[in-house]
Length: 374
Image (cartoon, rainbow, N blue to C red; front, side, top):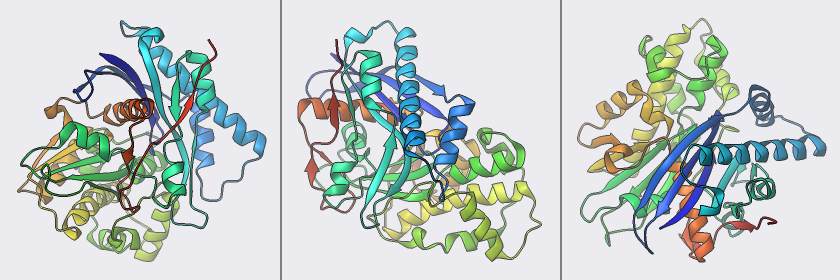
């Protein structure tokens, strides 16, 4: 048995998910031994929210300071995780850290993706080897650099006979298509907004960080005209490969759509209901555009906790079994963090990983290694 820690903070930007993961044997199953979420302190989250604004301008000092501050919070999260478990840092082979994305721009020239959370700070403070910067090599080679988790999904969930779709609903929603073994290639791409618009709208209107269970959305009614306007967005209809982030789907985007819709006196709960339907409809649209008829759909990420959203996904895809990944042994709230523990393990082993988004699915060894001073 070997132990790794995975760290993930996604586009919801609510905090850092950490998972202590054990791997049995060379290709044996992984088990999440313990997981936590360390919410960002208010001041740090405010700075991050400012940093991702489309027109954000930071001095080098501000950027470098934020990078170190996030790295310190990631290291703090590791300490908390280990304190709550029966293990110590000496038991852990390596940490895999995704970092906090500030900007993802794979389709510009030059293409780039920026994650902060200084891995040298993590390695030094935790005295554990740390692997980070998983995206840049794939982008430099012409890929999208995202999503990074399909290879992990394959290792955990691919079936001999069932066409399986894994949908991660964080701030942005992404899907992994897992054909039955030996019957096709793995495909992964971002479908569009997951929770980012829902979280942004409820914070703007009610100063609540997220819509618990989708209850506020359930209290409103879907505005079909607004939904139609949202669904005409170019990103929704683009064919893979594609990836996106909060630099695209944000409150400024929503305000433009509402303006185009031509009505400004909308009930806030009706907008929330429409945004929830938008997440469900854009995911379903991605499956339909790709002519996918899955036997089973596994949901992970924060969206798995949104009962209203899960109900809409089931209603829009009545022929598929739609369950959270918990039904298959992995906590949906910790799947992405576990994926970065797995990616760190692949890097330490020198095993290449395919990012299946537009670069011919070429496998590459991903991640940079930071060794602590002991």
